[in-house]
Image (cartoon, rainbow, N blue to C red; front, top):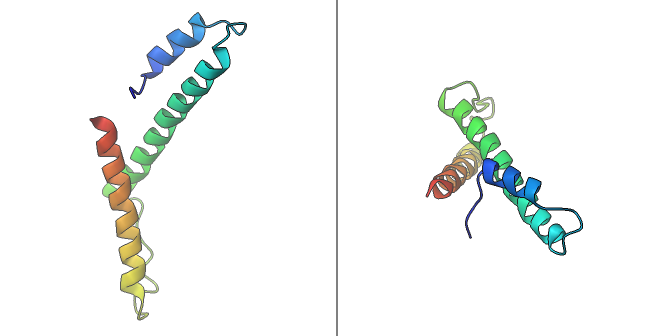
Length: 90
């Protein structure tokens, strides 16, 4: 399935009339595409804050025995987020 650009979404929204038989179906697809772009932008912003060092991990509990497992879960979540953004670029 092709992800529409924001410009394509806006053009189609203008072309559809609320009385159209397929309006609700199209509207749901546009809303999903719009949400995709919004979430992608938000995730990219969050990851850039990690990359530039302005969003950092609290190390106050690193002396505790399970600190490595907690840190691993965070690193894995960041990796999944980065991979999701790369997949969206294809």
